[in-house]
Image (cartoon, rainbow, N blue to C red; front, side, top):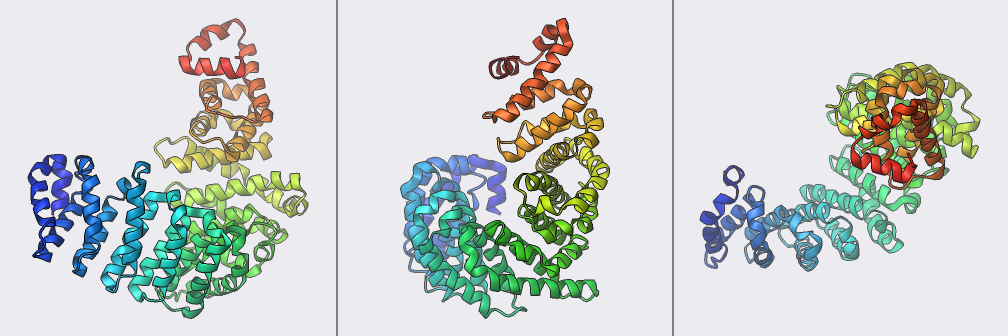
Length: 522
């Protein structure tokens, strides 16, 4: 097709194609010719993007006119074509263009024709991903339009509409939690939730939509959570029983994954102590254990994501139930299943750090954790072995390696005596991963743990000191407590080398030397 030709030839195609496109798009007599021209314009968007850039300031307004074409198929294809150039439309310098596109796509979302409705809603969902926070100023008209559409759309259109609402929530975040927006959006979503039967295929996209919406609403989701959670737990329990009995319905695994994600979204939104009763739920714990052992990777992935989220706001029941889940978490640290392993690694790190945070706050995590802490300590050798295997393989998924490095650092913070003897096996990989992280609390915890381990086994850093220095230099704004630890290690290593230090340090890259001298007085 033309898209393949554009990908193969790139901008070389444009001198031949552009005159044909201009003639086709300007054809007022035959709508079929206009439609074909717009289709061609969208088809070349990827392959000829750079060559089209100088023309988009005139092409996009022309497409906006075609959104009001008298023939519905032209309006439909114009919506799709606009979405193909979403990155340019959403560029900061094209704010006026974005405003015009938003306004007209919202009009087409309420078009009398169903095909146009669906194309416009799909195009708007794509534009949301490009525009991100730029959509904050349009949230009010967007919500009013999408809610109005929910009263008109039927099956296929509702799938697309739920995706557009969820994508809006993902991109504007807390803005959606403003009371005036909650008042517009939530009654409509709750009405749909109550109207759909448990067997309705529309329930899956609504679950996905609600997950994003709850995360965006944050604490303002509280009034809507209880009935949704009650039904979600019932759906989870039913799907779990059917899968365990070997008689699952076709969509049971998808239902499990989506409901686990929704519960995770509720934990994210409400936090502790609002979720304590939910966290203590025996029904949720039973479903979680079963889901972590599911034969389907997407269910295990969602289960470990929920587990990690629950560790962030632990209850008494959650902490006391940890011995049951720890073996499953560690066993899932297997890079053959990247998405599952990534969530398991993250969840394991969240559980480890939970004990530090719990002790500091005097929460349930600290006060009721003796048995679970002992169970965690028992898992350290196997967990560390699996985590080291990940950070030692640079070809693996970068996010997986970074999460593994953070978890090793956190282990060092909680169990430094158990981790220190293996420092020489993981120091290089961990430091290479940590240097790429943005400055945040996870990076700080990992570094603090690494420092504890180094102090116990400084010789374990000997072959990786350059990588440690490179990771240290990645900090832009380091808290005083951590900075003091880093200075102690850096100067301790320098002093241990005596006269050999100057020659060794001179071998460092010039920029790294400068940073270490300026910031850490090395």
